[in-house]
Amino acid sequence: MTTRGPDDLTSHILTLLPLIPAETRRAFAARLLGPLRDHDSHHRTELLATPEAFLDCDGSWTACAARLHLHVNSLRQRVARIERLTGRSLAGLETRLDFLAALRAG
Image (cartoon, rainbow, N blue to C red; front, top):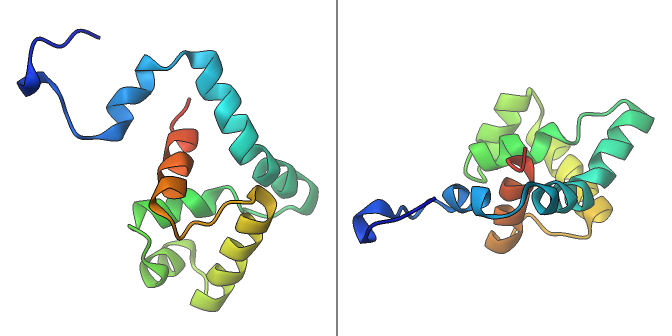
């Protein structure tokens, strides 16, 4: 990726992902999302879909619960489980960006 000047740059963080080697992106995603995948496969849950929906809904509990067809309290319990499994809080911007990058790591 070559930029010719400031007009070629974007403020969207996802445009930076291709600059990170694919193996590194996959390893990061596996480390962050692996516990959710493992939990989903062992317990037949759908935790992995939750962070993506939560981020797509800009962190809105109500919108995310509606999107996932859950009661808001059920969503809160699901997010708490995700936070316990990953050791990361979805309340913080940095963690949200990490989840976004991991989900888009390809």
